[in-house]
Every structure is written in C-alpha cells, then in structure tokens.
Length: 251
Image 1 (tube, one colour):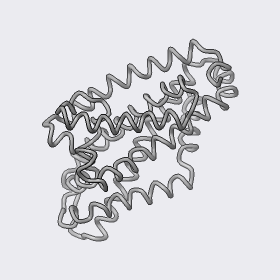
Image 2 (tube, rainbow, N blue to C red):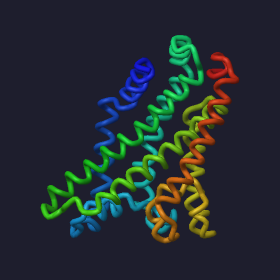
Image 3 (cartoon, rainbow, N blue to C red):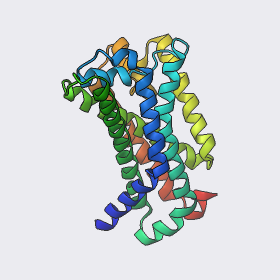
Image 4 (cartoon, rainbow, N blue to C red):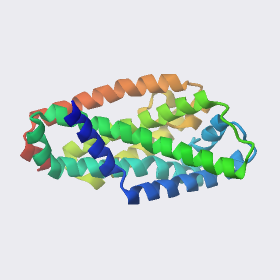
C-alpha cells in the first residue's frame, strides 16, 4: 500500500517541476488578465471563476477566448502526456518489475494523473482568487459550492483528455502526434457542438462552461458522463497494457 502511495507521490512530483509550476502560474495570471474586464466588478468568487474559465462557444467568435482555453487546458495535458510517454518508453522497464504487476503500475499512473489535474486547477483557482482579491478588496467567498463543482468538472474533463491521450500514445508510440490528434479532435468538437447543438453529447465539450450555459445542460450531467467515459478508457488502456509485454509498449 505504502509503495503504491509513494509511487503516486513520486509521479506527481515529476509532473510538477519548478519550471512547470512557474509556467502554470504565468498561464493562470494571463487567463485572469484576459477576463479582467468581466471580473473587476464581480465580488462573488464563484462568479469570478465562471467568468475566468468560461471557455469558447465557437472557434471563430472570440479568438482570444479560444486561445486562452487551449493554453490552460492543453498545457497540463502536454505536461502529463510527456510524463506518461516517458513512463511507457523508459521508466516502465524499471518500475513494473519492481511492482510485479503491469495493471497495478498502470492504475498508479492513472491516480497520479487525476491528482495532478486536481492540483493544477486548484492552483489556478488560488491564483485567480489572490489576484482578484488584490485588485478588488470587496471580493468574497460567495458561490464556494459553485467553485467546488467547477473545480471537479475541469479536473474530470482534463483527466478524460489524459485517458484519451494514453490510448492514443499506446497505439501511435508518439507523444507529439498523440497530442496533436487530441488537440485537433477537441477543436473540431467545439465547432460541431456549436453548429449541430449537440454539445451535451460530445465528451470533449463537457469541461467548457460556456457550453453548459448556452446548451442548458448541468455540470452534474457532464461529471457523470465523464466518469463513465473515463472508466471505459481506463479499462481499455489496462487491457492494452496487460496484453503487451514491456518491449511492445515501447516499440
């Protein structure tokens, strides 16, 4: 038990390097500044978070909104993806024999990924609150329940992206290619959801707040939907990993 906890902790530390944390802070400061015109007169923290992480409704309507969403959403995916790729290509040769079970190694990897997603957005929310409080001393913690729900949704949505990436990289054996496939799929999903009004049923659109507001579907729906899809993806990944030997994972 302690061995697995230590491995999860060690994996999370690798993901959150000092350089990575600095980049994350810069990204979240930038994200807040692009929405400062919306949050300057907003006192409730819950509404501030909604405005800051609103996300794109359509690709061409607001280029800055789309770019900002891609920046904060896919930075953590790229960092975690790079970590996973190195685990599969190199570290698995040393870690799996020590654990004695490929499935346990895979599940530990998954836990590290979801924990990292939660930490990432918790850090972002903290930075947003600090900047908002410094610029608006009347800000308060009203809407804290909404903050928790949005944190849960964004973390689950990002983790879903990660589970899709893992399946991609197990097939392609290429980090950059898997990342680009995921990015293009997400952008196409935003457009399709807007054109055909089917955001509620597109997995990649579940973590975009604007889609919920215009589409009229709840955060709870998205969280349940994402959890089901995540479980399916994790099972698929586990089947692939267990069936392959160590040399096949890397080559």
